[in-house]
Amino acid sequence: MKDCSQCVVRNRAICAGLEPDELDALGQLGRKQRVTKGQTVVWEGDDSVVVANVIEGVLKVSMSISDGREQIVGLVFASDFIGRPFGQQSPYSVTALTDAELCIFSRSTFDSFARQHPELEHKLLRRTLNELDRAHEWMLLLGKKTATERIATLLLEMSARLGETGCSADKSALDAFQLPLDRQQIGDVLGLTIETVSRQLSLLKADGVINLPDRRTVAIQNRARLQDLSAAA
Amino acid sequence: MKDCSQCVVRNRAICAGLEPDELDALGQLGRKQRVTKGQTVVWEGDDSVVVANVIEGVLKVSMSISDGREQIVGLVFASDFIGRPFGQQSPYSVTALTDAELCIFSRSTFDSFARQHPELEHKLLRRTLNELDRAHEWMLLLGKKTATERIATLLLEMSARLGETGCSADKSALDAFQLPLDRQQIGDVLGLTIETVSRQLSLLKADGVINLPDRRTVAIQNRARLQDLSAAA
DNA sequence: TCCATTCGTTGATCTGAATCAAGGAATGCC
DNA sequence: GGCATTCCTTGATTCAGATCAACGAATGGA
Image 1 (tube, each protein chain N blue to C red):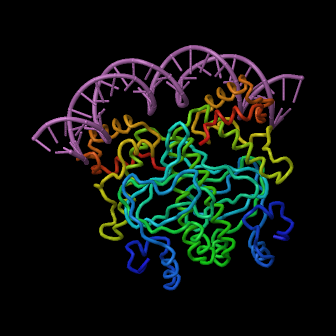
Image 2: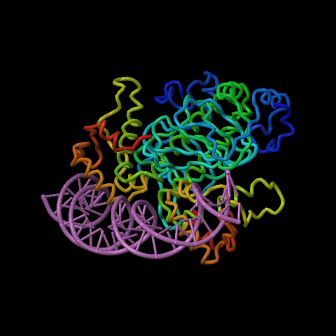
Image 3: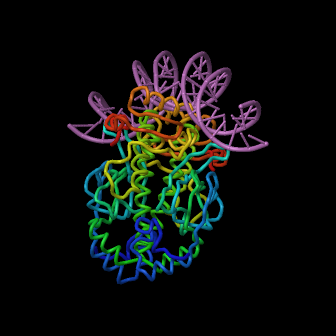
């Protein structure tokens, strides 16, 4: 890779905080790669061959049962980390939901580099702990929340995570945004069917809580109400 | 703490692999503490004050909604790590399911020690990555599996994790074990009600897949069948 | 521009698990 | 041992969300 210091996710990705020479060394090991919407980068059950930083785009992390049932267990945005370091196999698949740009490393190369650079491992640890918190939050949703609560929670979460990028601007999260997911994928994140997702969105729209100008865009019109409906802790 | 080198979880806990002097230094920071069944060690939403290793016993990690709905998001066994390092608040509660013995550290003290000891952070990272894998597996269960599949999966998981301790002996996991959970708690792990749990267990017993000599003990009589029923990936 | 295909919505019906209800078995306290 | 309490099981009924079905709207390729 040419020049990590120019990278758009430079200050938010796992590489943030590395010394210039470390950053340079890491840069030598990675390469940029574009992937197109629908393309799978990592396959569930396969050897864990690569890890990567997301430079741009959104990807899903999913697991499935042999009969085809699929659960999306994570969404990955710009500056997030992809893949399973320190593991022989990948327990999940990673698939692009939008065209995306990645900064890819061989898993084993990354592993050894990380072992020699405690600051990098520390960053990875913090990131993994945060992801675990999010996974726990989602387990509460999947185990205990109603369809309405799930939809409300997802909309707030998407609003917050899509808003993170604009580091400053207005601190209030985005009230209008493009969903990187179609209805089926929303169902696969929430443990619901496509029909239930569609009905719940229609209800929220009818109640004036949100607006749905087109298939993919959501405009939050009453954030407080959505927060109530989400049954936050 | 007196003598970490004599600790029963010495070779399995996060402290494994530390140099003798490191181990000694860490030992100075911790203290042993007994907790009794039902006692809560960490409260959801409170400041994250302590972290700990589990020396003996089983604890649950749980999150809840204000109206009382609760989801158990993890079970913690001997040699496992408890608490949220590098975070201001604890997103979950930790409660003893059996009498237990812990090796407790102040969270901030542990944090700084960890930052100065990359080997410890590495161990913690691996552990957190494994926990994340398990959380993902559970999200698949909560999002997509039927009641029967959930129960079968839990029984196999309990059998495996309770068997881990006996490091060698017979490699086949335990076919009979004591559940550290009552029916309500099984429901809270699986996203089911107590009645559904009870019915599913009765069905498995009627089918001769398991036996239930008393409330808390399970004997797996047909592991292959249980595996089929669990809808493993 | 047309057509084909994919995607989303809405309605009707069904069903797995929740809820409501009651009784039975184990456990612990006096 | 007797009593109270907690825990578990089983049955009857309900209900949220799944499934089945049809149609309408957007998208993309020729």
